[in-house]
Length: 309
Ligand code: UDP
Ligand code: MN
Image (cartoon, rainbow, N blue to C red):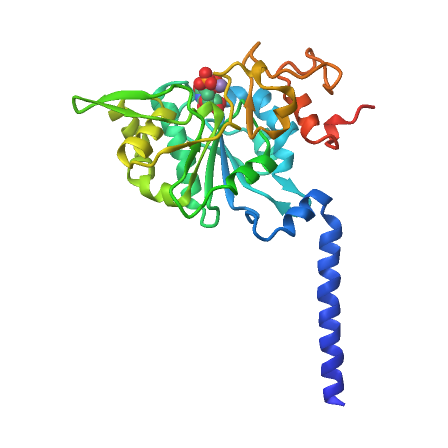
């Protein structure tokens, strides 16, 4: 009798387990399901994204991110990445809108090398506080990030190695350091760059724990350039270029329209925007001057903002 009860109990437990799994799977959309079933792929929350922003851009640039690619960070119950927005003043509205992911620094709210290095150092420290993610990716708030493509591209690299993935703007840069000219490459901050945790540990003494302002001060260059100097010139880790990263320092109209959905990051600055044929664009230029809404609808046609009444 006792044995029979135990067996019934076991069957019930197995049944309950499979019911739970099927309820979970049914709640995911097909794209999420496909990724969940690909065990060799990056697992969820393997990537930690920080976006540098400033109070003056909350209602414009940050809002645009929340209207578009922020919605791809989490799909159903699954968070594909962790994300934090690093800013300079507390803002209740955007703390609520980001569900607490807006983090305030005391770095100041100016576009000066010192203050931007302080913020980038803070972004790095936020990543170092986490344990799980294998990659840290920085983006500016005028970036559009295609999360699915970001994960696909990162999967091509070994996250256990020292990897510095970015897009250079200048062929090569140099600084005078201790009376000598030092040459190095760096990934433009405005296109976004990613580094592995291994590499983050390696550069920690120059970047982590609020040291980055001092590092930038001694090299005398901006945050992205100083980051490249530490990684490339000090640590000898090369920049791995990804053609899928883009800042507004390049002519964005030159990116073929058919390849827009393949890109990991895109950007905008005044007239320098991507080109989408009016017939394919979900929004006209007056409603969507940055073209980021229309881009989002090319990437995610089923997104709420893309449904016309
Ligand atoms: N930024 C900032 N504080 C400022 C100005 C800009 O944190 O006072 C951030 C901004 O949100 C963006 C990055 O720095 O993520 C680059 O700024 P922006 O795009 O305005 O200028 P760029 O360097 O691209 O010319
Ligand atoms: Mn910019």
